[in-house]
Length: 184
Image (cartoon, rainbow, N blue to C red; front, top):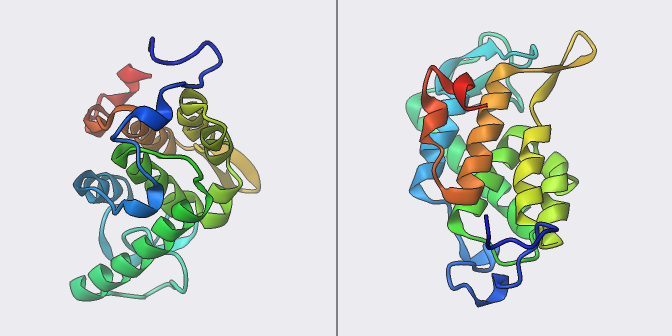
């Protein structure tokens, strides 16, 4: 990537027109595809990979065993959830970004929570102008707590690589393949 300095920063950031204030962005059309690919859409509560009751499009707050939702309820809650995570990204990103960067960061925030996102190396590095470093920091978030131990989860590894690629290029489709491990 010849456009980056040796330290991962870029000098041309402010002059590139497709970099905009994150507060001027709404989620792009690829966001929902990415989100539903990795979260799925479920109308009955289930235990996720770390034993948390989940429903809808990865909803965990207020979910309990036996809970069900209709398609309309899932869509309504998804809109509310997305707004919360968009606002979380808007509140901490202090540099101009691309649509792809915004979508990837909202996806990460959606999965790790606003508090986790706000304190992440993704945010710190991006706000320091280190785009490559910020992209690589997505890969740190591939673990879940299982039986009290942080454990790498293959689905999270796949998702983080997809988000990283979306952040840098907007192209994350190869991570939908059943052969995704060949890209690692």
